[in-house]
Length: 368
Image 1 (cartoon, rainbow, N blue to C red):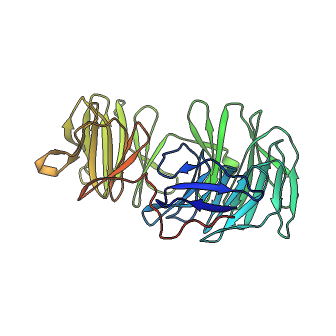
Image 2 (image 1 turned 180 degrees about the vertical axis):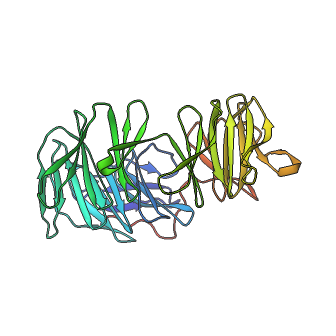
Image 3 (image 1 turned 90 degrees about the vertical axis):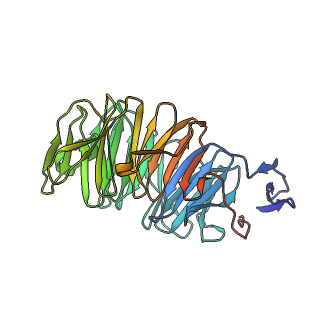
């Protein structure tokens, strides 16, 4: 397809191979994100409802394709793929999209893992890409609900709750579990997981079966877990968890900057003292609804949407006025805020900056 742009470089028209012109699309319009795919450690891709594919890298979003027919994306390592409504699949070469797979009629999803590529058909069939324009069917069960790949393995979730793994030696599917409460599965180098309809997450541990994961909090070389009763545990290696708090009104635990914090149901905010192995009180704030920590510091969000930064002996410094409805705060090298309207902003030395607006490179995305 080719692209026509207006002089202000914000409105795009699409022309397909037979000359059909698609309605205009404003690149400044925020659209609903319908899919994301993670590539290398610093690269993320997203697909919006209008067919915009963007790549997040080096701290900014760049549009790399616009096509209303795009229905799915996938990524693995440095590779990114997309599939459109006709079954065509394309691979991103860094500047443009190359058609590579031939047409797989009825394909609705594409799954990538390492050097392997799979597709899920609308009837539930699963196909593997073998190169030379060839797809090989590896499953023809029509109640396949979801297919994921990770760590060199391929999994599927069927409509009735059966979870299977593909056996590369026998070319058959081996049963892992039958769980009618499962609503989603996920896989990666860190393992294979299932999400149940009660929002509990379980990790598959091989012969040991499934291990329930409540909430994991990681910071540097330390790993903590918040139990469903509010207890806090620290991972000590050798399959050993050490309890470091048994107060059952613990509401939230976060770690960042080498420190561990907790927010209790009554509003008490505490920091873990690694020398005494006790919790030191930082604040008592019944209006605090969330805390977050990272390299940029420690913050609390109050129920009036104001955000405060902890400054040590100087106490708390207010850094937002509460004029915007905040849905969530997160901290890394910067403080990030997700508003209820979906906009994401970050706090820098120069003030607040939006990170959801797409930043365009000097070149337009080349189209297929």
